Length: 405
Length: 92
Image (cartoon, rainbow over all chains, first blue to last red; front, side, top):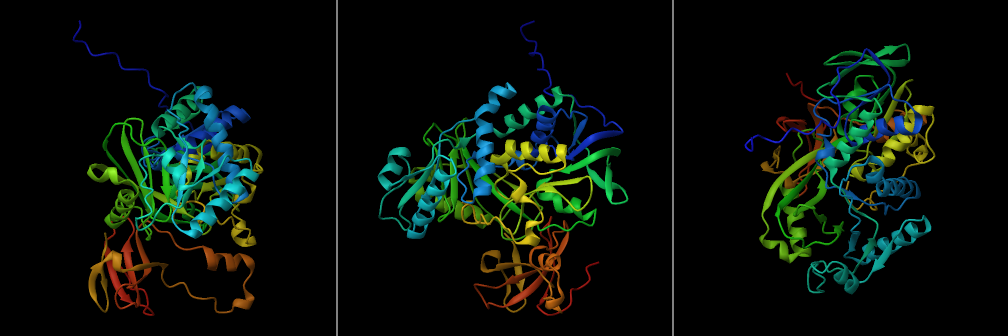
């Protein structure tokens, strides 16, 4: 029987039909929704939970990002939540008993102008004061750390230095989702795919369930984790949010031998590049300027990022693009997420991550689960409340996010 | 890449234009009377529809004039182009 195909491996999670009601219904089975379900069970013992996904599990932005993990943000509130995430990333593979190839190869944020140098050194100092690892490298040190970066002074935008966060890195995004899904499922969480939320069930001022393409599902609490589609869901409740959805593109090259030892980001010429474990160069740049849900972007964005990549890495000149794709990111006016309660009882909000969602996955789930379980924010997400747009206590991360919003 | 028909210059590549977000957002008629929540709404909250969207574009690398576009945010089909200040046309 040597010609017999190998047995199909066990599925990592069940595919149950929805029950009539749950204590918590999470809308969106991406990284944040799955992490929220996992921590609801692990940290709070809440397991009567459904995660609803209109498509397939982790098929939205979780499948479309550039997998970079770092916590070198400028503002205290941002650095704190991303650093909590990074600490969780460091222990999660063991805890989830699933290797998602978390590789702490460091991230360089290059400086090309005097202003970049000032911003970078300021951020290094802010990070160190906040307990985040950070170093300033001069051009020779940049070359030593990542020999393929062109540090010649004779280019249009010479490298004047870089910040380095040694603990930053990349992880295999699909495996992260599968690892979280598998453990959440083991706790009894129902992961329900092909189940689009089409409306909400209300009892007075309170949300008590959702209408879906698979019928009505009752809920003690409803937690949105739908990224770019959050405002279309909130519109169904008449809840207006400071969110704009934009396409964000990425691309990968053909497979190459290991040449690129770290993650390199440049806000000034605007590209970010790492090399996946399998060998592709993974590149991204900024969002498209216009609102869009089409999961594709403009070609000129790709041209810009390729030009930037070639200036920084002349050896990439003959690499071929294998594929490009787009995700839909929800961007807030201060380039920071919204995580917390809403004016509608029973409805919770986790959105507005813009381009920073993947790296935040475990911390986002951690604080969101806390907020849902206790009805009050965790200290780490308290500054990220929706009310900040009324009080004016914004968390303006535009420059430090290292990606133009 | 979008192909946008500037009302004055004709069809040009998206790279010649600057995006200005939602159109027809009027400055508050009585600013003194607004509450903090109403100011937040005016400053920070915009429509974010999945479908036709009335938005502003400026022909930054051309005539430098602002005008309005109705564009479908999923298909990117441009359904109308009209000068700033005109009322939003009804899209059937």
